[in-house]
Length: 276
Image 1 (spheres, one colour):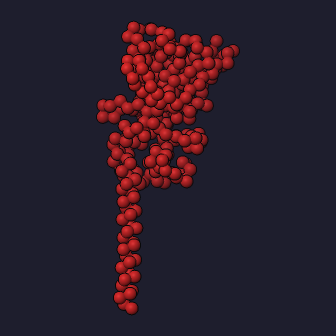
Image 2: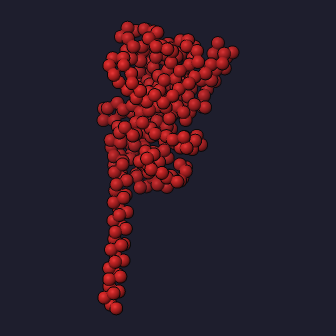
């Protein structure tokens, strides 16, 4: 009888130890998803957001942290979590001790919390002007050799340069203005959390200079078709559109992320601008 009880006790202890170690191994496996290089990974750069999650993001004023936790909990959407996004803040503690949390959190906030407005205002003039865009992340481009498309193209309903205003999506500081061979007349703005919002192929600028501070909704210039040449003010190599890019900087490396989910999240948040 004593021997039988000892065996039962031993089996119980083995089962308990197994469950503890299994939980620990599971935690270590999941925690391994987060490290200092996560923002350079393909899965983070793609910014995967399902339709279900996109609808929940609409209800959140600053979704960056909760979306970041969701990605860690689900392996960037590959696994399911039954909880709604707004309740995931309780799971932060399991991640904030891991290496790379601070950088990861700030990156999520820079992309998602700093974006306030859609970059093309609503038309308040006599013309019914609209735009469209699709997820063209890493579509093939051939100018200057084969490459992936690191942005989203916003296409106007009227192919007319200088007609559609472009506004800043974020508060921030103008870090770059001027001509680029690929981007034509472009402007780059560093947002409060450190992301770089890049607006390319402009036809003209508003009265701005490098180093100026801007507020979300401020006019930056007008949509155009400049670029694809070393010669300044080259136009007409492609239809009028705005190329919008979002970049992060990590260990002196420029990292592009997919702007499409962010643009979709703010597409109904537009300032009104009079267009003649």
